[in-house]
Amino acid sequence: MSQVNRPENMGDIESLIASKNIDTSRWYPISVDEYRNDVSQGIFASLDRHFRSNIAYSLQYLEYLELQMRELNVSSVIRAMLFKNFIIIAASIIEIAFYHLAKVNGKIKLRTEKQVHRQDIKKPDDITIPCPADKYTLFCFQNLPTGVEDLTRFETLIQIVRDNKLLTDTDLLVNKGYLKLLRKLRNKIHLTTATDPNETDYNKFWYSDYLSAKFFLLIVLTDSVYGKDKQLIFPQLFDAVLSQVKQYKSNKIQTYIWKS
Image (tube, rainbow, N blue to C red; front, side):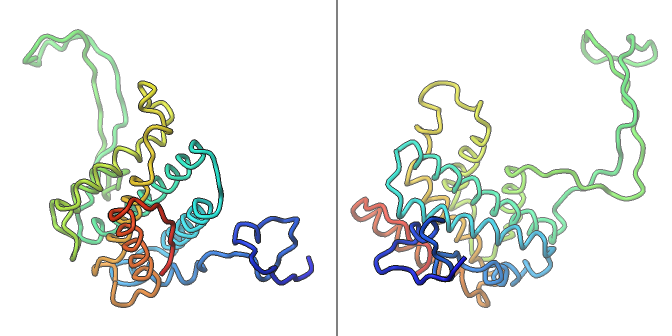
């Protein structure tokens, strides 16, 4: 494809349209290497590179979602789905940040045995049953030579980080409103969570929810435990979201600013 300079007044979204034939001057998110630099500081330095790369990829995607919010005039339904995707991805980044923090501090429990047999049986004669039961099952377990780590739920990770005060600058008790929102909305990745018309995605994802998720994500990523003093991108993102919050609180103006 031939290289074409971007025409004057062309928006970033327009520069991505294939038929416009824009090459080197098309919109591009902050590079993976720049994001990966910020998630290689502090306690993140001991996180496996492929996990740090996944965080960087997710941040590029959040940046692209925000570009769509800023430049596209879409239906209210589509905008709600953009908010939904943003919140779910933001929560997944917080999840891995909390997981690594808990693991480094030795707070992830390891399973020391595995189930090797299960069988329904008749009521055993030589065992006292404390209460009436309709069914009896025999479980057989085998000890493991080394502990095995099972999947730790997001809510459990939140409790570990909160109860052990693992973040340096951030008190999760003070920020419990953000966490309650994230837990609730993150679960809506499952389309069956709506129990009535008011629980559908369209009625559950709003600008304020997206802004809260973005704000809390940057609160976490810029915590000193993750090497805030050596980060280059995250402090700028935090300043940008502060500007968004200020404009929304003062006069309800909905802005979409990725980096200051």
